Length: 62
Image (cartoon, rainbow, N blue to C red):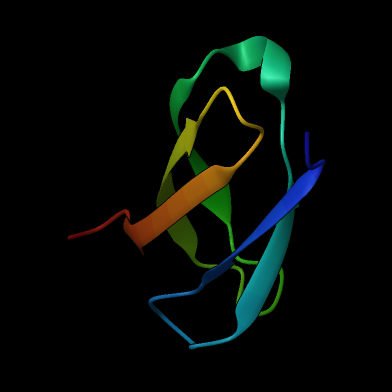
């Protein structure tokens, strides 16, 4: 299992690395501020049984 994943901030375009919480279930959705521009993003994370993670991000205000 991997402990981190990355996504591209839809506001500033920076690549952001986040820690994964495997205890949160295989499908997660939450709002997190970008570490660079501080604008809120809705993160949708899917964790599969093989230990891979897929992350998408969209602006919270869209």
